[in-house]
Image 1: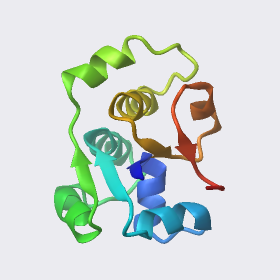
Image 2 (image 1 turned 60 degrees about the vertical axis):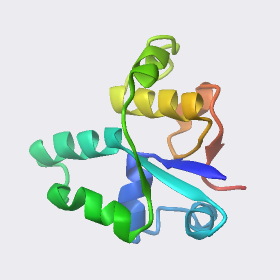
Image 3 (image 1 turned 120 degrees about the vertical axis):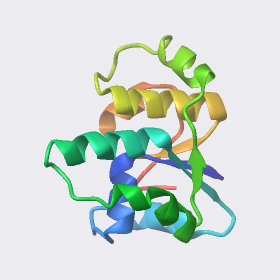
Image 4 (image 1 turned 90 degrees about the vertical axis):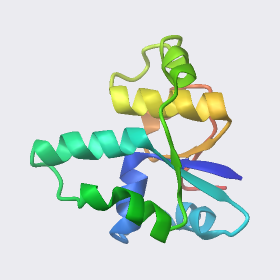
Length: 128
């Protein structure tokens, strides 16, 4: 399976937060799966860090991905164009771009955000 981690899933994975369900942990650790982290997440973390909402060593982002064997997913023009065609079920620009990337690249989005279910994208959180 090809997975795209939502930003909160990434942070909870890195901090070993119990809010990340076991089903999500299992698919992230499975050697059969490819795990992607979008540059959108780096952008979102940078904004939240500037607002004082989170502490995160952003300068180590690439090293963190490599250490966890996560693949970086750049933002491409096709993602932005797909974003322009999404219905406005969700107003968070970071989440909407993650949905566009998951849809365009046929990735399963690992997210506990219930608003994501309104989109035509495969989600994984509590169950397989």
